[in-house]
Image (cartoon, rainbow, N blue to C red):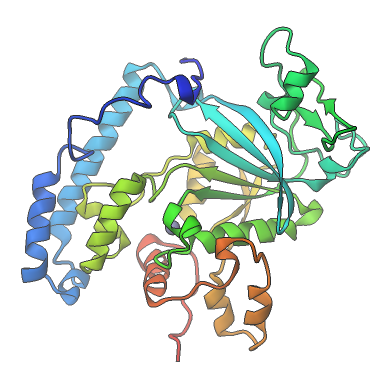
Length: 377
Ligand SMILES: [Zn+2]
């Protein structure tokens, strides 16, 4: 098993640009020919009727090859899925429109990315909150690796600086957490959202997708859960795992008439390249055990992925787009919805023709479990 390497010391972070211009290295000619064919040969109706299937099939084969190569790499390095290791490097309190949360920064031995866990568990901030949770209704949602000693002779000040403290820090109060002798499991199934980073949707407020609204909704739903408890895992896998650069290219293909799935395939990428091994390891580190989680998602493959990674999903909690909720709501409902989470980019109700197309693609092409609303009058 490889050690957990701090991102800043990884030699590949500042490595020169890869030799292959196209990340998969297999599909550039095919992409070029697909693009050349597009305006002249394909119409939107053609695409809908499957005229793009040859290119899509080739692209799917290329994606399968890339996946096989990745699997081989795992084999060569002697790693298996069970060897995923994560460590919470630090956490801190962040006050949000929905109440205080703890932001956890993780490192892992699978990629050089800093995945995040946003934990809502405000009982931990009470001054008399016991470290071991015995007097509390719920076991506190804490990271085991955060509370573990980071090195021999670690001081209380060092522990507190990286967030291994109990209750709330202030000028007059600071208590380092106890070093746990064993992992503590949660006794409830917290509400969990597994969210993948989306710079365009969350930071720019892009109306091509609903990621900003979904992140905001997840925090809002957790704030209304029992004990206001829950976890948002924020995974750095932009664009369903293909990265920002490829996502930007895919958006151009979408402007040419492809939907979100077809665009990924035309680039020689999978329709969804996200993985959840690190996410499962982070949940286990936060104490998720035999009681499992209640997962906020419309995506049945995400439920299946978590089960595959050994995380029990006791309930799937749907996330209905706010615009779709409003189609059947009273006129004042929109105003009420807008007034929530006013500080988040996605805090209002996002609505656009492009977004509507994206949402419908998720239901019609990606099996998301939502009822399509009637078209807007
Ligand atoms: Zn997005």
